[in-house]
Image (cartoon, rainbow, N blue to C red; front, side, top):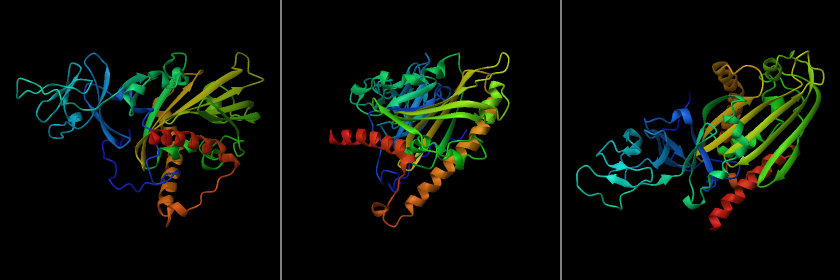
Length: 362
């Protein structure tokens, strides 16, 4: 599985995003740092919002997240080991509790209370590990979108994957708020018709989304095969997508077959989750998950293979547009034109930027 998370972000802040050459993320938000299966009693390093974070699971199975830098001589804590609930530095054995407090210095009898590292609130939910990178007192786990509860519902078949992307996380977010690119970028890989027109935009409760209804359109293989339907059969399709938070997006394709086969499904759904977390201005973690309420469990390798193709098309385009933006002689004077189909992406950008502005204003 791709993972560039152990590599430090570029020190030169020349990454260009759709909102300019600056940090365009809020700190007071829950960000996905890993899938739960990746975090064990062997610590791992993840760069999150330009910060090195050591993730580990205690002997009791609880996930913790600490600043990866030991304040003694800056050794990377993820190279250490777990003792009970604590993380032990590999260099001189300093031992840190999940709170970040140093609780043992092996070379002396007492432990100075000032020795500590930053601890990030961490919650394992819906199969993923979420960390809060802002003010600790604002870290309410209820802000993790409950819309994703189906990811841990046994009634839904699920599969997940990961990609490291050389692009700004907002470019990934805006990509999944845009349906019209499916008709062109994914024309051959998905073979889904009717997505070349702008969807309706829905807003409310700090969210933005889209909805598009297609009446009696041919079923693409991705929908037909798992449901036991003939490819190309005419059915009604409603597509919805919502930016749930700066780091989470949910989409659903609900199918209605008005003339199901004997014993066949009349209604079935496919859901997608896109979880994007900044590494730096110009790099991102991209976790995805897929869920369906019908058919057999996912063939994990086959599904990830298909995702490599489809999401690979998205990622290649995002990385290419990032390069083109960097080529602008003067980015501040470069003009980006938008059309009606971009409305959801524009509103999503504005919602996130409002959060960033509010934090900067204090």
